[in-house]
Length: 242
Image 1 (tube, one colour):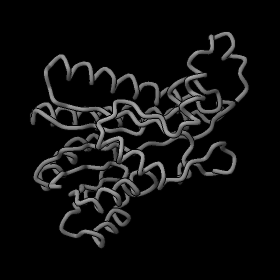
Image 2: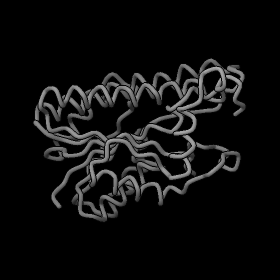
Image 3: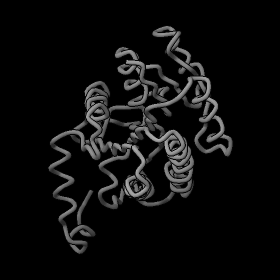
């Protein structure tokens, strides 16, 4: 296909699986995360089509490192962001959970998405796809910072999409909202309902990218549930037990 993608958060979970699928379909992929040894495993699959860059999205050097990766790859058609953190904090006892989640999912995320957008604006075309979450549809009491940062991401992508349209830039955006996925992010996955497998979610994501979907909720059960959530009045939602 001759297509080139950068995947941030490629060392595990959804990012790892999407990387594997794109490589199988002939893409050249720049893989980025904090753990170099996990990224280098992709070199055994397609050594001539894999480029490795260690990037911590919270580092001030992260945008520069993204540009370096794009340069050594010889360009980028797709930026896919799968990096993020989240933990339950139902009684808000651990302040560090909230601060670290905001730092990674809001500040770190924004500088990476912003740099990808600026690159595509200079190039005149491109595609930004991002894992947000169904958690961004409402404020969820067990994970306040996580649901808040996911709502932030969804609104930010929508704003950039509107801006790109007004600037006549051929930049596409895909906001990917999975339900609970069995990844290392869910430390006790058995405690979560309607759990989705990583492989099935990754296949849906790749299909959505090819089709240039604007927003996709995975899967149909979560689509129904979040549609219901959005319609609940605030006075009902604050009494809702999660």
